[in-house]
Image 1 (cartoon, rainbow, N blue to C red):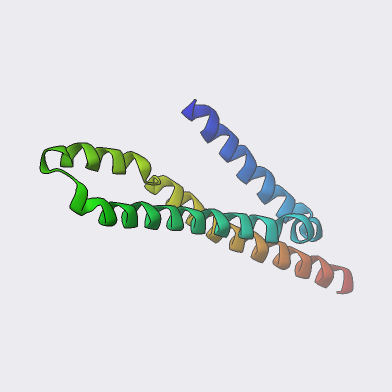
Image 2: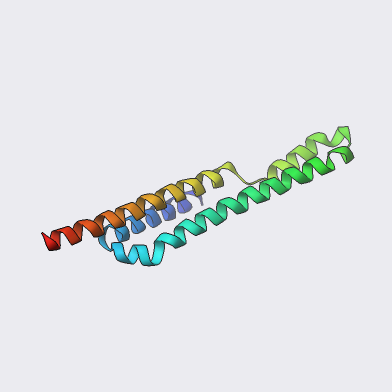
Length: 116
C-alpha cells in the first residue's frame, strides 16, 4: 500500500509541475492558492491536534497511576500526528511556492518571446 501512495504522490507532483510549466495561467488560476491553503490548513490542524493531545496529557497527569504510566505514554504516542505529516505539509508549502515561481517565470518568458 505504501508503494501505491508513493506512486500517486510522484504522479501528482509530476502532473502539477507539467501544468505549471506548460500552462502557467491555468496553474495560477486553478491550483496555486488551493495547494497553498490546503497544505497550510493541514499543517495547522496537525499542530492544533498535537497541542490538544499534549494539553490533555498534562491535565490528566495527576490522575495517572504510576503503574499505568507506560500504557498512557503508549496511548498518547498513537494519538499524536506522525512527524511525516508535518514534513509532507512543509514540503508541499515549499513546492507550492516553487511552482508559483515557475508559472510566473514561464509566463514572463513567453511574453518576452512574443514581444521580442
